[in-house]
Structures are given as structure tokens and as C-alpha cells.
Image (cartoon, rainbow, N blue to C red; front, side):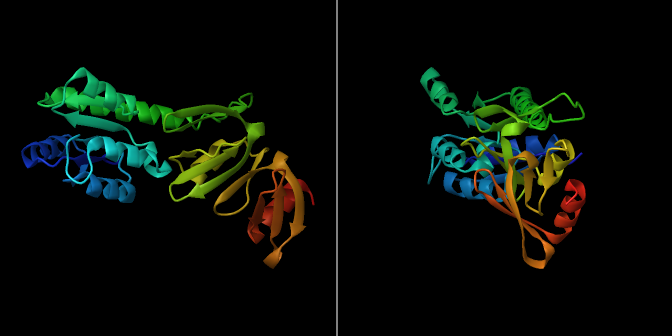
Length: 247
């Protein structure tokens, strides 16, 4: 199993280094940053599986780090644990009120922190799996989607387009465009092929949303959806599509 990647944001080396040793001893891959600004940059670049952040740090405090990461769909879904000596109830409420997943006070017991980490990673994995619950059950007609703190149960009929963005996929339904941590290939395997079609390397379309089809360059097709979104279908996909639709 691939080691989970944890980003530690802590300016105090006497806390950061033992924490890194603890995590590495428990088979986590550890990234580190000594201030909030560097931590934000690293989180955006590396997209870790979980972030542990101190609150009082130079350049940018933990609260600012969390708010900054929440503004980026790529990092908004990463489980986030505050680690701080600030143990007043109001401080805890502020951290959790922002939407953080947990709050652990220093000094901490190793077992308590590891339990919090495993709980958050397990919960995230279950939620991510639930996002792919369009499985072999032919009677199942909806999918669960979670983006940050927002969740939706979306019927296949409303899901008009899925679009790849690196290792994430953006869903288009109603006026929403959430992003989840999955690849287009993973979703293609789970979505019912009678309703969804891989138009090109980056997009899957809902066949029921097609409004117009016209020939395009190099043997491809230009598909217009009912919301007037235009999707270019590759030549190879167009050949499969013509055979599938009998055209």
C-alpha cells in the first residue's frame, strides 16, 4: 500500500522534528514547512493526504493557511488538523468553526494524535469511495459528490459533463461545479456506459444532454449539449460513438 503523505506546518523545531520522527516511524511520508506561507505553497504543489498545522506561525498563521487552502478546490478537500498550545475553548471553536477536521492541543500524546490522523484519513477515504457509488447496481441512479464541506446526491440525469483537471474531476450539474479527488478513468469505470460516454481524454458527457452533433476536424465530432456547452470528440471516440449510436 502506498504511504499516505502528511504535511506538517510547525515553526518550532523542538515540536516539528519529533513529530516528523513519530509519523515516519508509523510509515507516513512526511513533508514539512516552517511557516504558513511556505506551507500553502507546498500544499498546493504536493497535495498531501492530510495536513497538521500549528496556529501561531510566522508569515501566515494556521487560520490563514486553512482559509487560503479552502479557496482552492485542489486543496479544499484535504483533511486538516490544527495542532496548537492554544487550548482555550474559544480557540478550539474558532479552528473547528472554520471547517477544520480536528484540533489537538500541545503537548499531545502520540497515541491520541495518531488516532486522530487515522480517523480523518479513514473518514476521507470512505467519503471518497462514496463519491464513486455508481456501481454495478443497475437500479442505482445517483452519485454522491463531496467538495470541501458541501455534499450532493446527484441523479445521473442531472449530471451533464465531467471534466478532468490533473488528478481531479469537475462535475457539472445544475449551477454547481464541484471538484473531487478522482481521475476520469476511475469514474469512467463506475458510470453506466448506456448513459455516459468518454468524448476525449479530458471529458465524459451525458448522452441524454446532447442537443446537436456536427462533423469536426480530422474525423472528429463537435457535440453541443443542452446548456450550449461544446465538446470536441476525438476521431477515435467519434468512431466508437457512431458505432454505439448507429449513425
